[in-house]
Length: 292
Image (tube, rainbow, N blue to C red; front, side):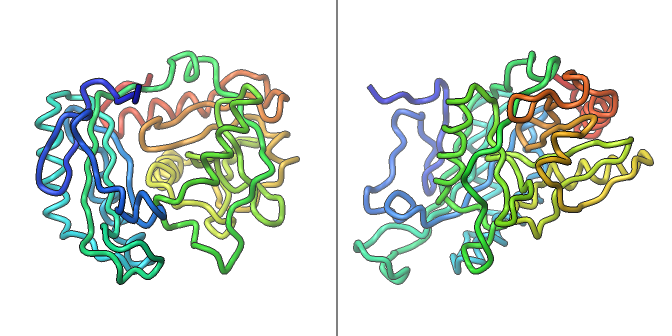
């Protein structure tokens, strides 16, 4: 039996449906080739978090693959309709635009018209123990794209690298997979950005390492600098990551989550550190919601 998230509402090109009723054509290029772009965020008190920034990044991804997006107001209206149908103040939100359906063939000209899909469902945050006790992460053999491949700043439907990386991490009992760049330096998590604290200074891998420019990543850097915490975007070796005093990951849905183990070795004391905990409070104040 196919599993559909309970109470999901889905907007499919003009109509909001229950999750089990929503469908797209098997000839849609998003299904056939991953030929599309997407964004994920959540709501806080019924409002999509950082929606303007997510739509801007969606547009940048679409430009990079020469995909014409529906106008921003149409996407925003679809988001509003879907959330209204869901009727939940705390929701998970996914916005997808594919190149559309048509004749089977790699040529983008085979597509008829872009397809807009918005998925909303009740928000399920990770287990609170992960925020209280911290998460374990592991480095996996998969690498982020080398120069000349699809740019990492494109959030496309072709996410197989992260899917396989996550599966590898789960097999090793870890919460998140860590991917490195072609030089073996830390790049990012399968679905998160990573930060490391050493001697009171925060370092996060630079965009040049081949990572998605996370919206929460940018907000966190601004918060740290606003509170006078020294931070930099610079390469991080696996050894430097292992020797950090503290570590944490960020994403739009998870916010700020402590990381306490890397490759089966404790980071620092093996407990969430004071700066990570303080940042969780600052981030919660910024978005208007108490930290988990």
